Amino acid sequence: MKDLWIRTDRLVLRPWEDSDANRLVLMTQDQQFQSRWGVFREPMDAARALDWVRTVRQSVESEQLGSWAVVENGHVVGCASLLPRWPDLEEEPMMAVEYRLLHSAQGKGLATEAILGLVNFGQNQHGIEDFYAFITPENTQAKNVAFKVGMKFWRMGRIEGVVVEIYRTHTHPGQPFTRRNFEPREEVA
Image (cartoon, rainbow, N blue to C red; front, side, top):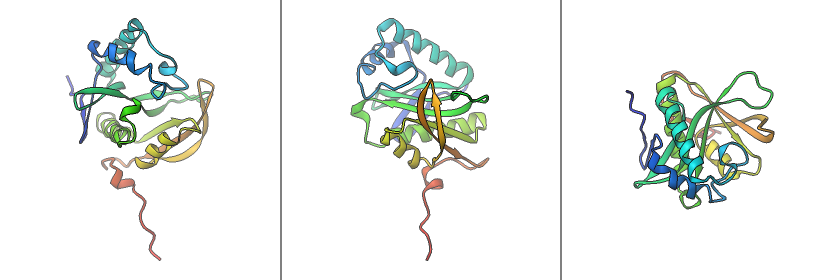
């Protein structure tokens, strides 16, 4: 079986475990963790959290796509996902990178680190070259993360009826995806 743990300088992204379900219940109580679409629109109870954990773990183990637990210093502080998304009215899926972090884990660069880890994994395990982020217009933190990992605004769209800005990046085959590769160059006068 392939190693499905994604390691970065400060984080481990690993498949969810049944023992994480109670932590997930607590995380979904945090309004900063909740989202406007998808599974985290509202708090989860223990049964729903356990079902979700088992479903996404099976997806990661079988497809190497889905949601990973984001672990910092031995504690689950969020989730990061690499999965196909079908924006409303689109015929083809787009490979999305997504994250949700507890409020206490925000502002430390962990989201950027997690997304870079997912993109490297997607590139190395699946040969994915185009990655997308679907961000609500008011979510300036997520836009900053998208910019930091080299994404650029592409166009507007909708996910589950919610208006989103779609950010996109393209990597080149064989080129590792790092923040350094995508940092703006100073213009020469």
